[in-house]
Image 1 (cartoon, one colour):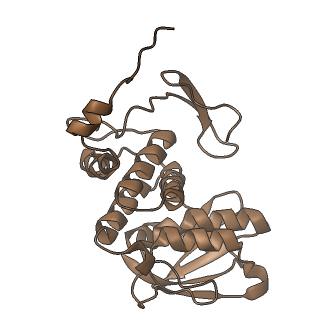
Image 2: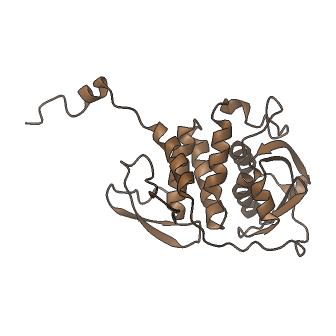
Image 3: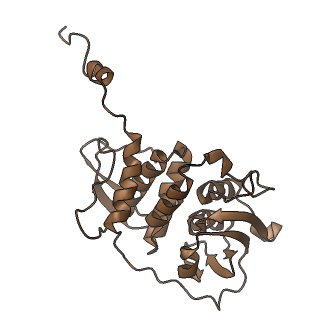
Length: 255
C-alpha cells in the first residue's frame, strides 16, 4: 500500500492476496456503490468484493478501520470459494440497529460482549489479530457467543502467519483449522451456516482427519449485491440547496 496510488479513470493492478494472482481493474473513485446486474448472479473479482463490502460496512455505521477489516474478511472468504459477502450482509442486517460499542469484546482477557450478548466477528477478529494471540503458549482461548463465526477465519489466518503455526477453531461441535498458508480444513459448510456460536481457539494438532476444503469459483446472487449496494449508498450525502450553492468555484480563475 502507498507506493502507487490509484489515478482517477486509470486501471490499477492489485493482488487477490499477498503472493496471489494479479488483477487489473478500472479505478473510479466517483462511484459510491456497485451496480448489480439486472437479473441473475455476478462474478466479482476479489477487489470488487472488498470495495463493495467496505462501503457497505461504512454505510451500516462501522468505523473506517473496522469497515476496512470487514471488506478484507469478505474478500479472503471469497478467494476460498466462500460467500463472505453474504455473511457480512447478514451481520450488517443484524447489527444495523445496535450500538457498535455494545457488540465489541470487552478486553483480550474478557472476550465477551459488554452485555453478554453476541459479538461482532470483525471487532473480535481485529482484536485477536492486533494482539497476535500466541495460541501455542496460552493454550485454548474461549470466547463469548459470536455472530456469523465464519467471518473470524481471515483474522485467524493473520495470526497463523505471524506465529507460523495452524490454529483450530471449534464452534457448536464443528471444527475448522486454518494453516499459515491460508488453506482451511474441517466442516466448512456447517461452520459457514452458523448464525452464532461460542468459539474455542487453540493451537492446531494433528489435522489428518479433517477434510481439506476445496475452493471453487462462484457467482454472487444479484439480491446480495443489491442489498450491499443499498448499505454502500448510505455513505453518500443527499444533494441539498446548500451543497448545490457551494458547488464549483466561488471566485474568478482569471489571473
